[in-house]
Length: 221
Image (tube, rainbow, N blue to C red; front, side, top):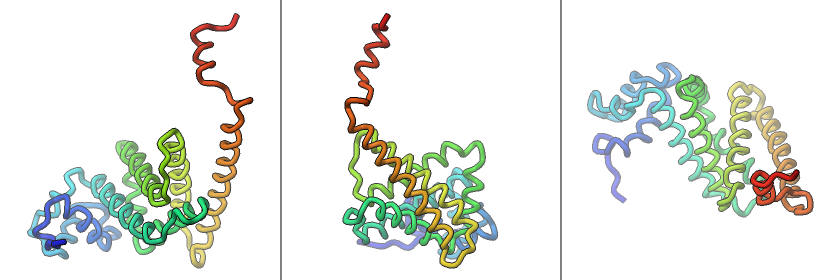
């Protein structure tokens, strides 16, 4: 495969390369044009080219960073053969891998969360969290296409988001507090999944959707 120098790349090709080069600058300049220009200079880009890679400004830069981090995580998880593990171990490995890869990027992540926490970026934030959870499940070998496809990603998104908050301020040795919290959260999720599976498997007590809809149309006197 032919590799191109940054100056020869299209804007789409340059996007993940530039956002990675921005990471050392973000703690000082934030997710900003200044950081993008500094990264562009590091890559030898013509003046002004870095600025047009992210037409949506800071929110676009954060989105690009999350896309970069998702791809980096997926590559690492693919090398670990997650489908061969127990489901609890798959999820634990996925979340730990994501956070361990960002060890030197904590301030960049903190600034990204501040941007995505702004009211105008709520929808972007939700889509990004869904994308990360989806990347984790795909790496874990998930092939669900029914409602489980959605509930799994919503649940894992919640686990990842809450663990991320602990990780941001964790000063314990070896991130012990973060991993202990993650284990507890996954334990709660596994208990819920077992209860859900038991309920769904009990046809005697599970309400019938067709019967429910029929009663809406023909109410019982």
